[in-house]
Image (cartoon, rainbow, N blue to C red):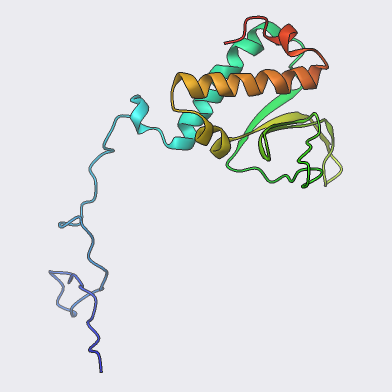
Length: 171
């Protein structure tokens, strides 16, 4: 029969009432924890992957917004980890115009304005899917260019215009 080994506990010192509370021992030996974050918040390396991607999306959208701000006042941007949408026809993988995809994998989706499940009016929204985009481009300029290209397609669909009208100088 295997012997059960109790977890390592630390004892509370300085109490006459007994051994005190038990807890699992962690890597911080003296119970102080980290005194501060490892990196200052201003350093890009301090951002999580999703925060870094959000900044890429905002940077890619800034140029489009600068040219089309008046027409895009009713449009929201959102980032989702993975797509939760299936192709219209799984055999031929056909997507509606509102979806920007790479084959069978959607990269972004335009949700038109309408009424939500609670009966309240909702604004039009572009949903960018982070993981498919990150897997198709390296960090930095490649990811920025890909996100910009996807946003141009989505904004063109939203406004009913040609992509060349939205971004006459492709990256």
